Length: 227
Image (cartoon, rainbow, N blue to C red):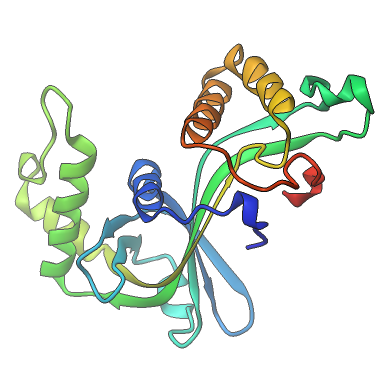
């Protein structure tokens, strides 16, 4: 992932929080001749392996689990809130006009080796963990025991388990860190009056600002092409 230093997120707690919050990943694998991709929920298990692992499952009929190259790097992409940023919102537009449209977003790329699990007990344990996670907070959470056991057993046989053993994580918080304070204020003001995703991005920008200055004396001089 192309990530200029001023957009790089290195706080492991923030990165893990985004993975857990988003949960839904684009899993991309290499077959040896082409790329394959599936959108699946993935559970972050920080105690698995040296650096943790992402756990998920695919339908048995999905060929990705049979075609992936186990010697090649696999990639899971988690995308959080994002919003378009108009150059009209920058204070610097009225000063010199050298501004262009861009997009603000948060994303995490998790690289690692993909392991397939086809043991029914392993898969049952994963599905129970996923169910407990996503049903938590509901007044009457659904549990696998609510369905007939024969039906659940058939569902377990119909999937294969996946474990992406983490080898490397890249995280990018692109939140106008390359703009000066007046331009950032303009973006926050306009996004705050928008829809829920826009308001969420404005919230991320405020949080980033509250953590202190991003540091670079060159801040505000880099083009939005840095995205």
